[in-house]
Image (cartoon, helix red, strand yellow):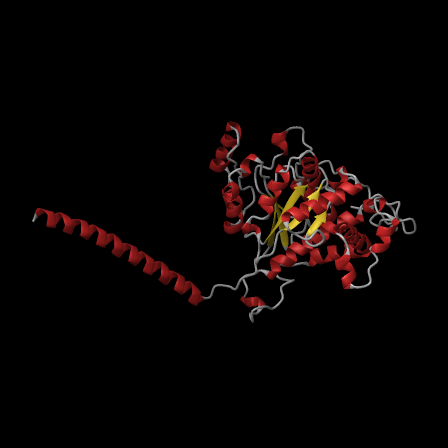
Length: 391
């Protein structure tokens, strides 16, 4: 991710010391002397007294402070991670009694054009650290059809055969798709309940005829059903904060409302925990507007502006990043993935025992017998009624 050479050691993977001149510390350009002094709190009560703007700036300062030394450590934890490593004993059950999947699955969802595929690109760059990166197509493509993700795509962003997690890129929801309320998110509900697999088609009601024909052809001749179906363990909602803020400036709240509809969808929650929110394209806004957009979006969604939300600049399929060296973005992305894994490992359910399976089979059998007797009762009741009418 970082290509700026260290002045002392000449290491191409290390960035220079943090200072006000660094472009990735964009929030400092809008901070006054009083605001910089107010962020130096000494107690918990002082933090609670900060206004939303100062809390956001203080969170960004935290990321900048730990990014230099914490990035490699956190990245190493992700490389060494195996499903269930972050699980802690709860409910009196041992880890062996929990239904831990072989691979944790993180699903990226959101409104179309939010930057999901660009986020995958950045994950490959920061976490995979490969010379040749299989960039996903993004909205930077020449045509809209090329830019749209038509199928669920599984990505091994660590580029490791022993990776303990994978990331799924999905097709974004158009505003027209969300007019029907939660009924428009039936497909998303199926992903969360039934699971997902590589190259699974993503269809929409508003698809044109050519797109529908392509989907039907792929379903008929594709071997995608042979891919392993994975249960979604954590969802990350990706939103284009520049587009949302521009809409708010013009009096159009539809992009923000569409994002809320996806973010607040009950199927995305795990044990009352909200999905992680990643805001993209913030580099297209000024520093003041970027902070203001984050505050307004989080307030509308009813979440904290500093916990579980990240402002991340993404890559295109051309591998172009907004800044040459941005350790803050790299660390924020790595921390977001780590948080997703932590959330996943907290929400495993106990395994089904043989007794549970026997009770399930017995309940099915009793339901079948009850339905059979009800059907027979209805048939004989009709025959008895005909016989009574003859008499």
